Image 1 (tube, rainbow, N blue to C red):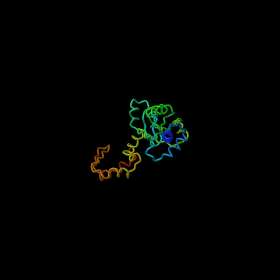
Image 2 (cartoon, rainbow, N blue to C red):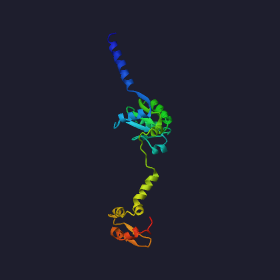
Image 3 (cartoon, helix red, strand yellow):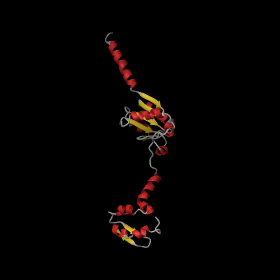
Length: 198
């Protein structure tokens, strides 16, 4: 009987250690911010955004991964994740992430934090978010890089863009064709005139 007592205590101690490592907790925005600060730079801390995709693009927590909790592939995607890591999950208002939390718990994830107030409340309180550039802003950026010199009459930008391009061809409205940097540079008066509209 004396031999069984230490073994019993050892068994209880091991249960206590394993239970103390399992965390499933709902957090406020403030608690979530503190958690993110605590795990900053830790590769074992993963943030998952379960908001609708269009809302993810309008602002999400930095380094968050996106996945649709209602996708048929959600379970197989989650199965690829390391169950030993610590996860913070959230969505717009807490509904989708609550579903995600329950699914992940049922799949054996033990270290789950849930921002139950959602990213909407997070933004209202002024916590930082990352915004994805929209397709429109990307198109605007490309157009500005290509034609911005003409809109702003910025010839230094224009010349620097074509300086090393010996194949550059300029065709003006008056059928004047110019090849290469030096020839185009001679047309500065035309490009700079008030009559030229980009």
